[in-house]
Image 1 (cartoon, helix red, strand yellow):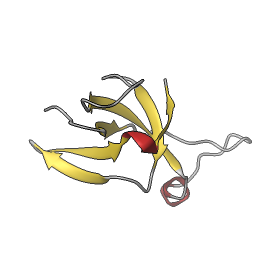
Image 2: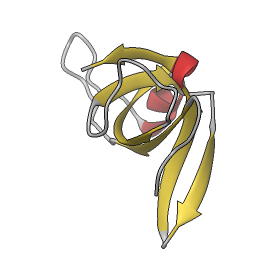
Image 3: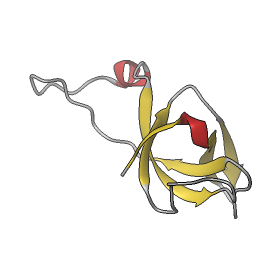
Length: 85
């Protein structure tokens, strides 16, 4: 599968989120966070500065989900990425 244009296909990374005091945040609290962490599966032909297999943080409210071969992926736009590692 290959993304086209300014689209990026991502796979969500589920991570435990701790407060500064070391307490684990509940699933409901984590869902309220503005950004989420994902692994890049494929970058579109017009995307710059992001490559396949990068780990990124992107706006959690952007894009949409799609299911391919029983696996769920996110599809976001390049402009929704705020950090690339």
